[in-house]
Image 1 (cartoon, rainbow, N blue to C red):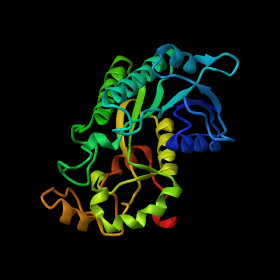
Image 2: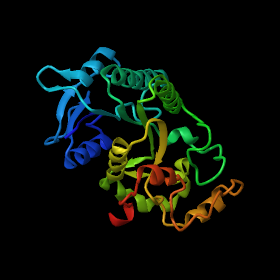
Image 3: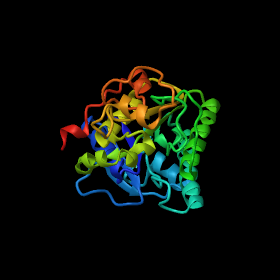
Length: 285
């Protein structure tokens, strides 16, 4: 059994990640500022990720709770633009991620998976994307301070892995995370498709997000890699190619788009991680 620290293990995606890892035989430590849900199968410790000393201790062992860890999943952050003033969002998220990378390196932990964001692709797509389906091949295009912070985190990851070639830093560009309870609202999106145009009608089921995390942890990749992680379909019943033709008529289409498939390409995650998402909102409403 391996011991994994999950930062933000009390959040929406964090809860799913903790459950998935525990179910698959990992010993999990949840470090967060928010209390975990009742019955969570993880050791919990309240840690301020903006304090490098606290993060270092969380990765090397806390008193009589545990001694050292084998890997880190970093999910804790102010999770979206506008929830806090821009400066506060940047200062919290970028500093916390720096401390996670730095403390992991100091502790000899070479396996780190963290939450980047679909926003680095250019969300909201008020400026159309360069092509569809969007993928990891074009340069990041942050359009908010939140997204700028994620772009900075990815750039930091490149340099941390340059300094230490044995280090694996995988940034998962999660789409909009959804629990089963969220799917009740999905049929209403058909009334106004523009209400979800901001991320090309994408989403990620938290359970499939957790699957991507575990696959990234278990991969034998080294260095920095970024992956889009989305559900295999969109939030609408309309064919995806029809949506592109109506709302992005001048955007090049790189390959045939089948049915209601996601416009946030998960081809790289399928190819390099073996990512095969199993959940769709259509099975829940």
